Each structure stands twice: as structure tokens, then as C-alpha cells.
Length: 439
Ligand code: F6P
Ligand code: MG
Image (cartoon, rainbow, N blue to C red; front, side, top):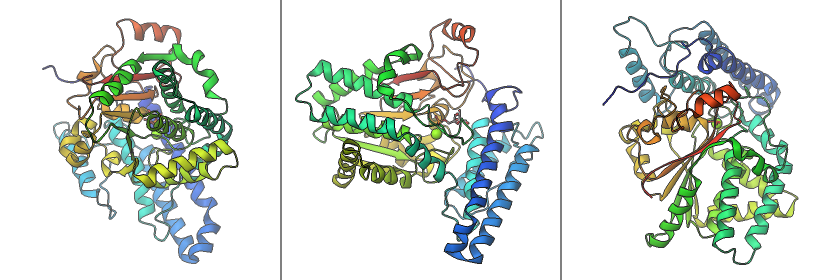
């Protein structure tokens, strides 16, 4: 077997990884610091002087982190009380061991990008963790909530659409498939709305995405949705008595999460699946990623909408959760720096959980990077090969492209894209549905 290619890294001056570490991540840290500042009086009201001291401490830890990053200091071990600290520090040791010959230490602009970028979010968590009594404060919560509110019109239009489908008499297989494909595409384009790409600035959905789907079709570079349909129909016909389980590894809160919940709702009422298992983060992550608080908040806020259809969707979602037809899982593995090919070894319980699914959907760009181990694969490398042995169940990546990584393209396709749009890999304008697994 040939050696796999190297990792994306900020060593490559001018690359997206480089620009992220140089510009976007310091900007995200500055915004987090500013958010803490703005909540000073709230901390005082809640915790008195202790709250103000904690705010100061968290800010000084975050400023230190920003300085370490901007001056390319060595990556230092984590020191908080989290139950993942040992695994993180072992991983740091492993990164160090790879460099012993060169005498280098892991550093921001030198080590694999995936590792250092995940590490930054873990350090943000550490800064808060070390600053009780404000240790539970999510510095990204405001912007996640704002994304939901700013996308309100699109959310209402989507819920209205779903309610009409729910109340339609027997849809018939062709119509059902058409709607399945539509709602999948909505969930794909929902991934444009992440707040990490925009450096934490607003990135909500303002237009009715349902009307834009036709025009967006040419931007889908790989479309394996026919396989997904075929697989679900097969699972339903030949399935186990326990039913058809679909797992969704979530990405962003706000509009994207609503598109995922709408799709999950459709899968249940159209009887394409019998249970949906969601996977989210245990700590605030990559600005907009879903935590359990965001998940519950979104269901509650959808339910309390003054728009009838939106509120009816929220009520249905709450009910699915109560009935155990929607199950939310958090696992610390999702906020470790490991690529998914290491899951079986690092988190065998999570791997076993995913194996129970008929299909696992991985939303978003970061999940793609972890599926691909963030390596510089050739554009034409087969998806199955780049997964490097990660095959817990049939799976599909649903992502808009926001990093210089894409596999499974046709020969010549990448060159053509570069000729027409040199930034096609990183703008989030293009999307993929990339499937791997036996049908
Ligand atoms: O900043 C790195 C990155 O993974 C980008 O590639 C992408 O812009 C963003 O973070 C996260 O995107 P997503 O929310 O789609 O995982
Ligand atoms: Mg994200």
C-alpha cells in the first residue's frame, strides 16, 4: 500500500489553512473576548464581584491564547479538569513524537491544521473551565441564537412546506422520492450558514431556499442521493423488526439545524425511517456547532413560534424526543482532534453505536475533514480509500466545500472548476452528497 499523503497545514503559506490560522481564528478569539466584555454586568448581577473576576480571568487566558497563536508558540498541554485532558495530552505527545528527528515542537503554523484548529476550540473551553463561576458560559451562544432569529422567514417557509407534506394524503413513491431529494438538498445548502467560515459574523439564511433549489443544482459536484434513496427503500423492505435507524452527525446550529430537523421529521412521517439518532458536541465548538443546549433551545423556540406551521413542527419534534423516536447523543470523541479512522480505537462505544444505523449522514465541512483525515488526497482519489478504513455503516457526507480538500471527482473536473472559479474549494458555494457503503 502506498503511503497516504501529508496533512493540510498552515505551513503552506497562502493556503486556506494558513489564512485560517493567520486571520480567521484570531478574529474568532477577539470576538469571544468582546462577548465576555459585553456580558460583564450580567456576570456581576448573577455572581457579584466573583463573576467580574472570572470574566477578567477568562479574558486574560483567551488573550494569552491569541498571542501564542499569532507568535507561533509551541502547543502546550491542557491543564483543566476535563475528562478528555489525558487523551488530548497523549495526542499532543504523539504529535511531538512525530517530530523528534527534526527537533521541532508542535506549533500553530507547523503542525497538522486539523489538530491545531481543534486545539484552539478546546483551549477556549479550557479558559472558561478555569474561570468559575462563569465556566458554563458559551461564548458562541449569542451568535448561534442570532442565526436562528435572522433566518426566521426561511424557517417559517420551510416549516410551512413540511406541514403541507405532513397533511398530504398518501404521497405515492415518485412524489415521495421527489420530496426526499428536495429536503436533502435543503439540508445541504443549510450548511452554507456556518459561523466559523465567516469568522463568527452573521451568516443566516434570508431567502426561501425551496425556490432556489433548481438554480443551485449545477453547484452539486457529486450527487449520490439516488444511493441514499435506494438504501432506505431496501432497509425498509428487508429491515430488522426493530425498524430503520438513520443517524445524523450534526454540524451547525441555527438555520442548518432546522433543515436537518425538517429532514429528520420527513423521514419519520413518510415512514422511510423509524428512528433518528442525532450526534452533537459536548462543548462549544467551531463557533456554530450544535450542543445539547442548542438542540433543545431550537426545538423549544420552534415550538413557541407565533407562526402556526412552525410551532406545529416544534411540537412534533418535542414529541419525537419524548417518544424516543428522536434520540440525541453527545460523545466527547466529536471534540477530540482525531480523524474518524481512529474512532474504532479511541471511541469503540461510539463506533458500535454508529454500526446500529442503516445509514449515517455526516453534515458539514469539519466532519468531511475528519472523515478524510484532513490529508491532501488527489481530487480523483476514491472516497472509500480516503476513508482509511472507517466504515461503521453505509455513510454519506453532506457538505458545502470550505477547505482545500475534495476526493472522488472525475478526471479533469477539478481543473475545469479551477479555471472557472479559482476559489471553488473554500467559498461554500459548491456542495456534495458523497456516499460510501454497500447498498
Ligand atoms: O475553519 C475550518 C473549517 O473546518 C472550515 O473548513 C469551515 O469553514 C469551518 O471550519 C467549519 O465548517 P462546518 O461548519 O461546515 O463544519
Ligand atoms: Mg460547524
